[in-house]
Every structure is written in C-alpha cells, then in structure tokens.
Length: 554
Image (cartoon, rainbow, N blue to C red; front, top):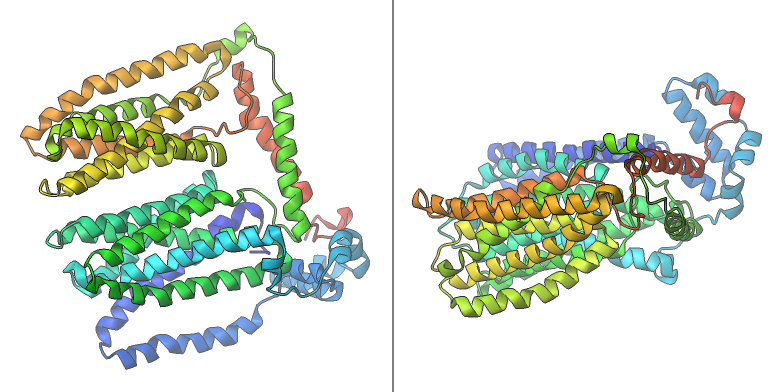
C-alpha cells in the first residue's frame, strides 16, 4: 500500500482480494478430489512454505524507513525499486543530500519503532484501534459463523463452496465501485449492515425453504467478502506509517479471535435452533454503527505520524468554515439559466412514495389488527428519523438516502418469500421497511433542496413532489398483479427502491456544502473544488522523489 499512488489503492486492493476468490474455487476442487481431511490439510499448507521464502524478497517501505529516521535504508529501497521499474539511471541520481532536503520533516519527527501499547495510550490512536478492532472481529465472526452453517442449507457443501467463491466476483467489483466513488466508510458500513440483515433473515426463514436460505447466505457471504476487501484498505489508510503494520496485525488478531469465538456461539443452537444466526447477524449490524465514528480516507494521502491525523481533522474543520464563507450572490445570469443540466433526485422521490404506499396497502395481509399496526407504524418513525438524522449529519445525504432505500427494498423483498403463517416476522419486516421509508422521506426533502440551485429550487421540489404522487397512483395498480402471483406486488415494490438506491450514486454529496444559487455554482462545485482538493492532496504527499531537475525520468 505504501508504494501505491492514491488513485490505485482501491484497484490494487480489489485485485489482491480476487486471489482469495481464486483460492476458494481451488479449495472446493481440492476438497472434492482429496476427501480425507488430513491429506487435504497437508495439501493446502504446503504452498505457505514457498510464500514464506518469497516474502524475504519483498522491498521494505521507504516511507516507513524515513519515519524511523533511517535515510540510508530509505535511499537503498528507492534505488532498488527504481531498478525493478527499469529506471536504474534515475535511481542512481538519488543521493543522501537530496533525501535529507526532501524528507526533512520525516527525519526530524522519526520515532523509530513504536510499541503496540501506543494504540491504547494515544487518544487519537485509541479511537481508531477500538473501532477497527470491532470491525475486524465482526467481519470474521459473521463470516465463519455463516460458513459453519453450510451443512444446514440442504445443498451439497462442495457446490455451495463453489457458489460462495463465485459470488465474490461481483461482490468485490461492486465493493470496488462503492469504495472508489462513495468512499471507504459508506462501503464498510453498508457491507456489514447488509451482511447482518441477511444472516438475521436466515434465522426466521423456515429450513424447508432451502433455496431462499441459500440465496440469503450467498448474499451475506458476498457482503462479508466486500467488507474484508474494504477493511484491509481502510485500516492501512487510517493508521499512520509509524504504527501501520502494528495496527494491521492487531486487526488481523481480532479477526482470528472472531473466528475462534464463532464455533462456541454455534453451540447455543441447543437452546434455540435460530439463536446462533441471530447472534451472528446482530454483531455486524452493531459494528456497522461503529463505522460512523471513523473518518473518511477517500483521496487522502497516507498519514505518517499521529500529528498528521490531527492536522487532517483540523484541515477538515477549516475547509468547512471556508465553505460557509464562500456563499455566492443570489442571482443567475440568462446564459447560466439556459444551460441547466444536472442529475435530479426524481427517481428517488418516485421510488420512496411508490414503496411506501405499496407497503401500507398490504397491511390487511399481515394477520395483525390494522389499528395496532398503524400505531406501530407511527411509533417506528421516531427512532428511524433519529437514526436517519445521525447518518445524514455524520456520513452525508447520499449514503443516508442510498442505505434507507436499499434496506426498504430488502425488507419488502424478504416479505415476499416469508410464509404468511409467520405473521410476526412479516410484521417486523414491514415495520422495519416503514421506518427506513420514513428516514428516506426525511432525507429526500433536505437532499433535493440542497441539490437544486436557488433559481430553480422550488420548481425542482415541486417536480419531485409530483413524481411522489405518481408513485402513489401507480402502487394500487401494481397491487392488482397479485391475481397472477400472490407475492408479485411485493417483489415489484421491493425492486423499485433497490434500483433507486443505485441511481443515488449518480448524485453529488451536499454535506457541509453551501447552497448553490446558479448553474455555474454547480459546475464550480463539481470541477473547481475537486481540482483544488486534488492539488492540495498532491502538495501534502510525502516527497520521496528527487529534486525538480531529476524528476523527469524517475
């Protein structure tokens, strides 16, 4: 990671993750060909010895050498990498004087080897350590809990092992897109939350529905795979160079603790058959909430010291203050009005209203008093809107809108496969979906107003409200498709918000942004500020190259 440019970290991390998927494919074939477990263990262990020997040929990080105050080793590492890249001549131009001139900050602040106790002593590192430890533990805990339940799905363990490996391919690709375009924090939160929901849903689906249970398990496995892919990258970008490897090692240790604890939790099935799944699902849901306490690292340079972490937080606060000062005039010129082009949240308004009325019109099918469920539907709005407020304020409008619509779709789709005899389960899913829709409505009103410029804001809000009315008109017509297949309306009502959540990725984030007044403001926000941010990030990169006349060929 420390040798990778900012824009390639996610790509390299995803490609590395695909090697795990390849190993899973090979494991299924090897287990089928070598059924005896002792011989299989020997077969899969032998390659580790070859990789152990190969690891001695890795080039140590020059960034780490510099923070340890070792310019001689830094110079040697840079020259070796230049030779590997076919730039031996440029590497020979590097000298100790050049390095000392460019790495003055790192050499003066170098602290040598840092103890693992610093993760608890330093308040800034302690917060990262506790949150990341929970993420590592939850991901591994849920993963092994899901894998150990394979024999209960009623499907060949060899076949489901291949399916588990195949689902990694799209899951890691989708995770790569979310990591690159939305950020590390939303990707980590969404993957853990969806994994937890899938495992919890498996706890209420009857064992006779083996296809449904297998589908939920495969989806949960894909989400956990995306979580593993993200957390490796996220942890490396959060910890400073001086303690990065220690932090990654501690995270990996917590993951091993999760894998050790999961078999013990499986023993609780003797008390209640579905209890292990409820535990395995609740832990990643709780860990996803802890992700909100971590900072975003998308397009950020790697920190080298604890001071860099503090400076990053200070710069974010100053940037917010500057954005509030840069409020622009409240009038647009004629040429600007004519060129109004922007992605609009209209599909989101339609999907929210469409799913809402589709859910409400299905009340009589839950087998519960419609008066009681109406009261419950009203009561769930209180915590739902409060949670939505926290997500909107700390993660942003776009992740909040996307997550609420996605969860709504999953709840409604799940209701389509749960038998009608399970009235409590169906009611619980409906109530959860209603709460997510309430949070979506809350967010979309704010988000729409912040996206449109002042010159057309009220018109945009009016058009959004019109699309919501269209959704409420169409939903009764969709309910009529129950004559073809009883669960078909729920599948349609669930698919539309899921598709709308994907469309939300096309909208820009507006958290801590001043309201735009003209179309030009939108263009400036999208182009100018991104360029300025990139320039600032490039200036903050640790200068590990030679002086200006020598840069050309390195």
